[in-house]
Length: 120
Image (tube, rainbow, N blue to C red):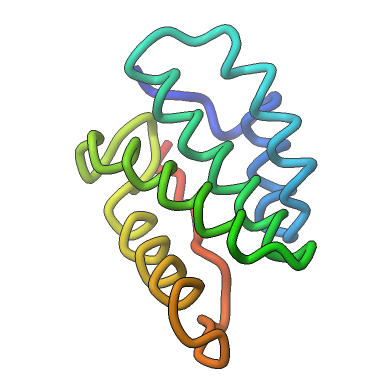
């Protein structure tokens, strides 16, 4: 199923995510998540966990952020490279870089947060 990233709560959450408003992105997406069925439900849960992870990171909780991002990655690993109207492959790769950085040397953090590229 292709999710609609051009309008409604998904689009609003995506805009918040792009602005670094991760808690707000999570809030927009959560209402949609409640209405979905598998496998889209697990996919959107991974995006919600990603947003929540970066909210924790910005709030000074890198351990919590790494834990949430690892959980998101487990869900994203089950998805093909393109799923739900999103380029999942690049998102997975960027999230892996962040997890490695959060678990290792905090002085080598990536310059930007992972990007969610909608494909519809």
